[in-house]
Image 1 (cartoon, helix red, strand yellow):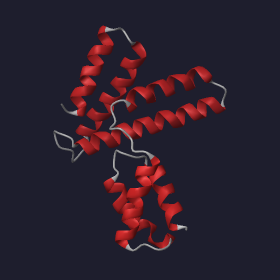
Image 2 (cartoon, helix red, strand yellow; image 1 turned 60 degrees about the vertical axis):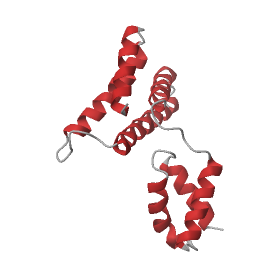
Image 3 (cartoon, one colour; image 1 turned 180 degrees about the horizontal axis):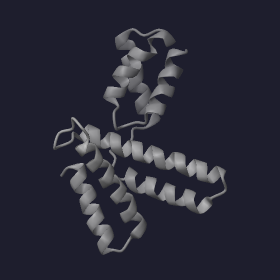
Image 4 (cartoon, helix red, strand yellow; image 1 turned 45 degrees about the vertical axis):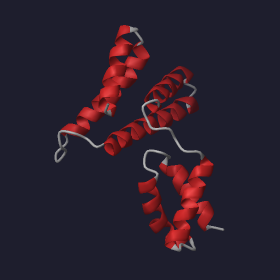
Length: 150
């Protein structure tokens, strides 16, 4: 079952159980996927990687919005954003632990012969492809920096 089908299933379940907030979050995901499908140059079907990137972007947006709302003492809006981020995250593949990420990046560094921060771009390119959907980009970048700065 594709990610889009899982989202549609979730929408149906949320409608039947009258979960308004969950329904709202899932409809936002469906809208983002439909917009991406109708963009110029996009095909009828999307790859799973493209769908995962959309979900990651939506989660990141929700978390950033929640942080802004919290800074402005708008706790009720921050809670709504955190809730929606949690709903969307359920449809993402399970995220890897920091230890797993460190071991993979250390292996990439050894394979590429990277020795300094000047090689970060090369390592990041490979790491981003291997860890796509399994780890946040910021965590990957921070781990690469810490390994290369030693």
